[in-house]
Image 1 (cartoon, rainbow, N blue to C red):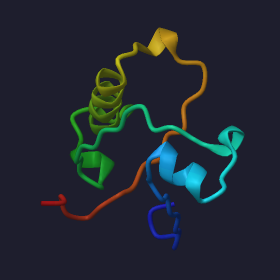
Image 2: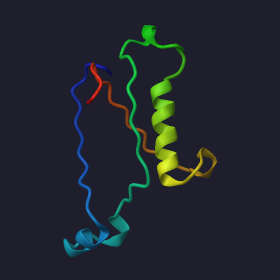
Image 3: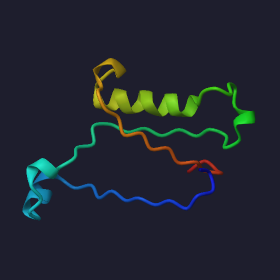
Image 4: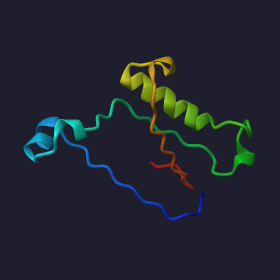
Length: 88
């Protein structure tokens, strides 16, 4: 997974702009929260081998931003991106 070429894109705009472009309401997707964090790409340098502290931290940030707790969420789209250097 670390060395596979992958790509994705997401275009963010207001609901009003999307509607003006003719996108039906039932196709709108709303971003409620997001978060990011950095962790060593090499699991051996992590404090714990069986979990990712960066993923937990980013998830906590996203839920705080969205104003929800894990117990209130039914479905999650989790995307992780491995960087070799922290993003400044």
